[in-house]
Amino acid sequence: MADKSLSGLTEAEAKEFHAQFTTTFQAFMAICVLAHILVWVWKPWY
Image 1 (cartoon, rainbow, N blue to C red):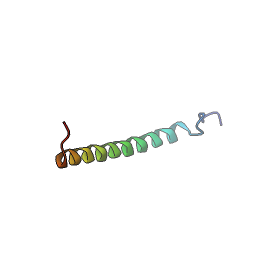
Image 2 (spheres, rainbow, N blue to C red):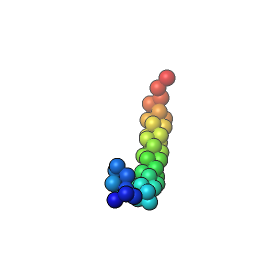
Image 3 (cartoon, one colour):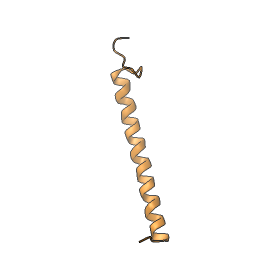
């Protein structure tokens, strides 16, 4: 139990979770940017 943090994850599990979270977040942000570009092409705002 001493090797677990407050979240209940070991360091290896936390690193694995962080890697997956980072990848998913980057994909989400890419989709958001693409959506904003497509809306701006459709109806530009100034």
